[in-house]
Length: 298
Figure 1 (tube, rainbow, N blue to C red):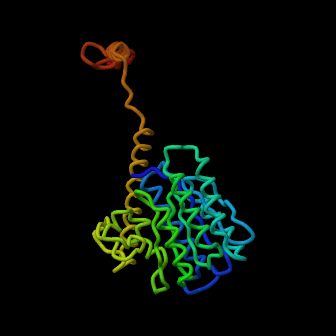
Figure 2: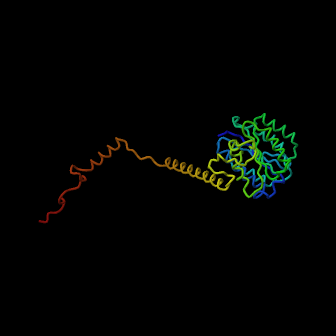
Figure 3: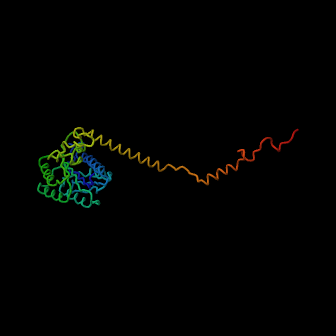
């Protein structure tokens, strides 16, 4: 699988407080971030993921590139109390690109995944210019647009996506409100399924009809709950098998080896036993018949 360094940017602006996505826009992002992290690190254990926020006064790097899921969860928890202001999309993309530039493993492909649920203040011209710059630096940009789905936001994101797309990567997933979780909808998007999921035509910016090659043979867009349950079941079974293998290896290492006597030691023990027995095999010193010391009473 692809070796990647991925910066995930969450939208913690005031718009993320809305409850049109279950349970709120921000909580829906947090669940989706965990799903994306698991997908990336399970596809290639050497891939790393970082976390940023783009709301408030300015963008903030919450977690540098890591393979520790706990750090990502801790960063999401801290940001939950910092929901305020508007979003800074262009600045966030530039900061994310800078963080990826200083990755330790230069063989990792650079990628940014951005959640956006708020209006975009930047004009289309500046966004197109930034998109061309990121493409020149070989940075893939994936957008997950939800919440604010008006024509202005969609037009700007589509223009950015058209100018940043390269040979692979750089997708735009537009997810409207609905009864399903945001993370469930992402299962069938090209952001998780790859370019093969969006090869049906020019609409590869959308996530619909993207699961023809889904690993379980089930279209998640039809039954996302079943697809998620199958994925979780597979991960639990994998963890159980790994645990059993570790326990078996530990038990085998702790089992004592059988004691093997030296040939001379065994021979000496046999001779010692024989010296304690007479020729009839009876203990030496044992007397047959009557005791010689007994008095003759005749």
